[in-house]
Image (tube, rainbow, N blue to C red; front, top):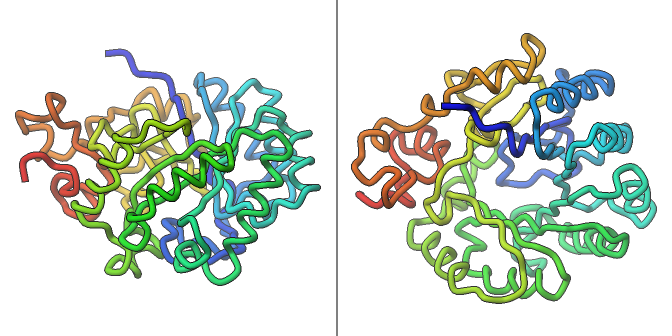
Amino acid sequence: MTRERPHNIEFEITTACNYQCIHCYCNAGPKSKNELSTERVKSVIDQLVEANTELLDIVGGEPLVRSDIYEILSYGCEKGLQMMMNTNASLVTKQVARKLKEACPNLLIGVSLDGPTPEIHEKIRGRGTFDKTMNGMVNLLNEGFDVTILFVVNALNYKYIDDMLKLAESLGTHLYVDRFVPVGRGLLHKDLLMPTKEQIQYVAKKLEEYNGGVQLFVEENIFGGECSAGKTHASILVDGTVVPCGHFRYSPEFYMGNINEKPFKEIWYSYDQQSIVPKQCSTCPLYKVSCHGGCFAYSHLIYQTSDLLVCKVL
């Protein structure tokens, strides 16, 4: 069976961040001593182009804390990659938005927002963060960027899905919906944030019923669809380690390789996604019939079995 090209590769260019969000999967805050230099980042971009990558998503930490961010985005753009950047938008002044537009005119931008009001959002990200993020997002929209709100569902914010849809409608953005995975700093707050099966079903039902104008991007861990980790998606961590998705960062047994040791193309095209399919799923009669297993990171890291929040057997 031929291996699919890499569709969406996340590249964690820094773990430095001006926020200390309680759900952060990479424990962002301080700069990693293993952070790659500008030239090394460019070399990785070259490797991704060689591997026929479709989209490169620049993530952190907060990518905008790197002073060379414009050079990195510009380089990826020039190489013909569809570039994307995930940000909390708090550092996006009008000037920053303009510089981003000059560096990479077709840049797609994801803005992390954990609720439609300061009260909800700031339970996750801290006091004063809501207005900073909203102001930054407006600056990006005014500069003509294609913006997607990144909404991670947890036990505190799941019931506000309708309000998030309305907010995206009013701003003219898309909406991406993901599910909280308790790793990194999030593991310390899992009892507060981990959603129940009923809460995820509530969100899924609202999204299924939605017929408005907002374009939705919904992860498989909401609907129980096919996990893209290692199949069409991978994450390059701050030290060059390649993992099926960022949530596998704490599990060396699932590492795909390291771009400091071999080219990304070799890592990608020699990898077998079946290696992360939980045994309970691969032997289940419903797998790939009426259920695709949901989130494999959840399966291995949280339950050591199938993804109980979407499993159709349990």
